[in-house]
Image 1: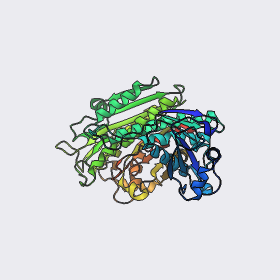
Image 2 (image 1 turned 120 degrees about the vertical axis):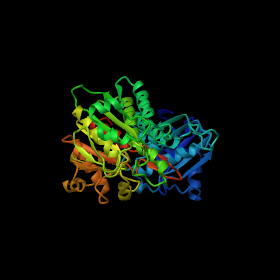
Image 3 (image 1 turned 60 degrees about the vertical axis):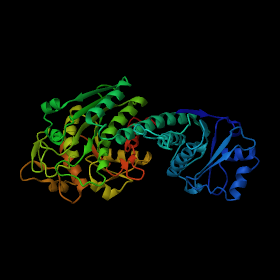
Length: 497
């Protein structure tokens, strides 16, 4: 997709389609009013007749109107002006692009970003346009062998009309384009079937991303190296699998070498059967998404490199399968983590924390300014927060506050849960330093409490994305969350906006 910025009278725009904003009731926005005058009042007559309600997300594609140079006009509803906020705008923009995707249009000019919307500025409106385009255009088709009726849209050029600050619009488009492509990458990685997306395949995708960017380098540790490092907790998870585990280290240097990096750690279980503590059969196919944290980290590293952010970032991807087998770890086994702490494994389906704890210990080597892990960790988080907000816990109030603010701004929200020391009591073991589960109560929190033992004094946050990383049938697929939240956090941290 080619994103450009345009100026000039709406009636003279020459493109495949004009996208015009309309509020439900009240005066027409400036650009739409100009188009209406050129068309002899056609749009106002249409609204008076009740042919278009203009609720947020409503669209109406019209053929060529008199007085306009474009062969089509797409009206996009924003709802009532007094209630129009960022979410309504995002809904309207996405609906407009979805409608265009069904039409034989290769180029369009959008005026949706020229309307003042609560909670936005020119930069944010342009970013929403680019991100929404990638969202609406996304298709996962590599394993389809026939026409599906769901082919990608034909639109190849999208121009945003700029009413004022064109530099802010261009910056918003550049950021939104990079974020949108990163989210699509995370979705691609998550949607691949587990017979394709193995730990070795995932490591190769990380290498390919690094190969496109001079400031990004990658190292892949094999099981022998992990064993020498003492990653007994991670290796206990992969023991039953024929697929070798991989530990991916991605490093981006955008600041001075002496500047402490931000470290991201992404859970990379490419398929989770539960191991010996076997999961029930229904929806087990969705356990291919258990590497969504890893996909997020790889995608964020791509976005950081494309945007050239002035910050040092490290992405860690511990990756393996969790399978039953003759060599699989059993409930009751005790393993030694890289930190030296011993862990009694009471349930092999609580495996994500077992690979993350060794990754957190490894991450501390970089002396990070902040360390954030991302994991589809607990079903309890889905019960607590549903599919709208990711769970957030951590040992640093400033870090948690920054992540919450980033999530709200990016429309990729999280919710902070408590992490009081009393929750650690539920993880006591009579035989080891800690148990890997704490029982039915507060399962999301005790999982984070377990991880906190390995974060040490590093400012650390844990994002449980079990409810937000994918959607279930009938529209099953990866969402690419929380890529938007994390890139927003880095943009805010570096004051690049």
